[in-house]
Length: 485
Image (cartoon, rainbow, N blue to C red; front, side, top):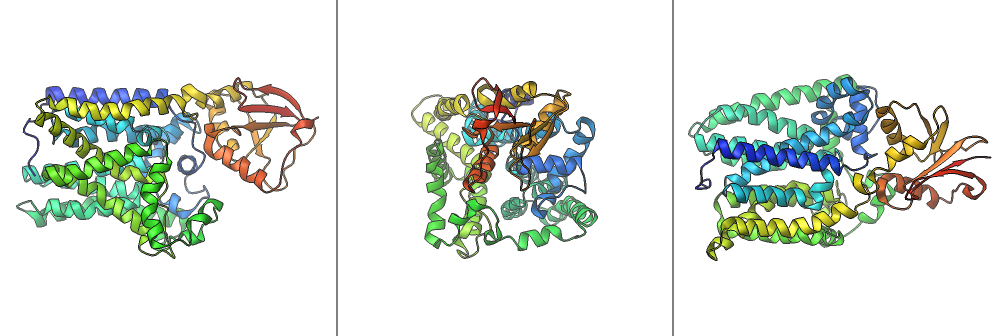
């Protein structure tokens, strides 16, 4: 598994990696999504209200997210930087990591095209600013792979000291990164001092284990909270109405659900193309490209097992959640780009042309996705800013529960004092003179805001909006403010 014949050149590769990272961050911020009202909101709240925020233990034990956010929250408080910080940190790490891995199997231009293909993939693009754990998990997992490969190639021990810490951090971001650890064990076996190499990984892992046990004990009064979460996960215990149709299926249904779920997404065919090209690359090119494919397929296989293939009666996760697929996207994208570059070389064309062709294949639908997905800022993602600017100060605004989570963050960011309450909560009814805000009920500008409102309506509840006085509407009609007469 020898690296690319073209050696790493710091004077060229470092500026290219930094430029790609800077451009990706700029685009990620320009096309940032509306704040996500589910898990990412909770992570920020857990950092803002350390030890007192109430949520599920599986989320409150994600110390790899919460701990880095604590100093950010201390500086910026409940404002937008706190809620976007983790997503942008993940973007800052994942871009150079993918570049380095791609650079080891191809020249500079091929590696750069690979990064473009990875970032422009709609699945990646929407997660650049959302703050879920998945992007950071694959970023740290990629850094771990870089470190163990570097240690093996140079027969050095010190990179493994760092690798242990990074692997532990990745586990504390998303526990499923442990599924790739067997590959790291195999790579470290290639060192001349392999047992010392294994020992070098342990301090970083032990440090994170101590952090996990200590903080879980301090905040949850359960030092083994994560262990209890990992061993007790069962979708049958879910209270979400969306999980009902996923349960009680056959093993074959769960096995087929992954490709079918991909094809249900407008951009899902791209994932299938990348997966097929990547697997073909792993089989034909082998070597380090093959290792990347194994790195991608390990979490894919174990996701399927968890999601119902192993025990159809008790799936622990859903396989049809798109962000879970991020775990195998970097390895397959790098392999697919390497194959396209090799084919171009066989056709006596510049190798970069093959990788650029793959990037173009992804960029065209990626741009279309960025221009049409309502949650992005240039589209309807500016809606929270417009709403906050229009809402009356020092007045109670009744809205759905999810909207009432995020609008205070936007208001705090511009120094505006707004008070919100949830009209979908039991016992909360608008009174005369109060304001009612209907937000993002026509599309998924705020996905969970719409879902929260729709579920409330599905229970047979409603407000007599026709009897209220409409005092303001957003420019696109996706937010409307009423006053109760």
